[in-house]
Length: 106
Image 1 (cartoon, helix red, strand yellow):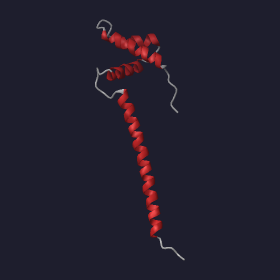
Image 2 (cartoon, rainbow, N blue to C red):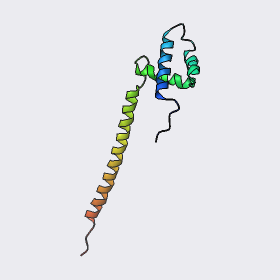
Image 3 (cartoon, rainbow, N blue to C red):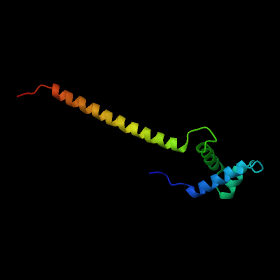
Image 4 (spheres, rainbow, N blue to C red):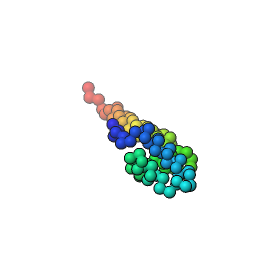
């Protein structure tokens, strides 16, 4: 079970949008994240991380997008499940092969 979120999704989206808009304006760029974080009672590093991810998702900054990260996590989970199933199948086939090679007593 996932841990409860400290900040609501609405607050996260609003703070991110405000920070991106403030950073677009050269006159309010300096200290925009700290100022907005203080206004909304959000930790500045949390807001900085949200803005960075929003820039990556928007194509402004290089990095792994949220969609790509989600897809990658799904693929890694699928690979783990397939490897586990493979291991079970190999073990069971070895067991049954040994049973066939065992002499039967009558």
